[in-house]
Length: 213
Image (cartoon, rainbow, N blue to C red; front, side, top):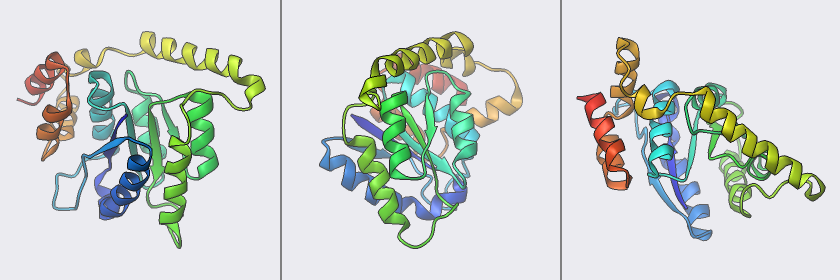
């Protein structure tokens, strides 16, 4: 599985710490990680809205199989991501939430609060969150007696998402100046280069390039 780390400007000071923990856990489980930043405050100031657009492009194009994102509380990033097509994002601040989200909901994106309650031993909690995310294949259900019902509900949520949101390539064609600017900023800095390197969907690359031109 290819995992993307997508952080925003307000928590960029923790990027190095977060990527170190994520890579440690992901590699132990046979996964790869791409760090899309934001790396520091000198980088372009991406917000959770811009990150949601970027996350949708990553997941819908196959550039990533799972995205770790977040903001100060994690709530804004979760809401923005869930507004986008092809993204099922959960808010997880502890290991049990991480495990239950991946097993019950089988989502493809996790929002983490990178400021709220980020105190002593935060990196330990984060490592356990990531460990529970990868401990077994997603969508298994919990408790096992409810697995069949949960799997059906997760599948129905994906269907509902597909009919309730526009295709990401249509969103990239938006004429609203605010949306166009958010798209441009979503791919600012090193992100466009990294996206090209990891995206197998040539049509998506072309759609993004046209949107940011």
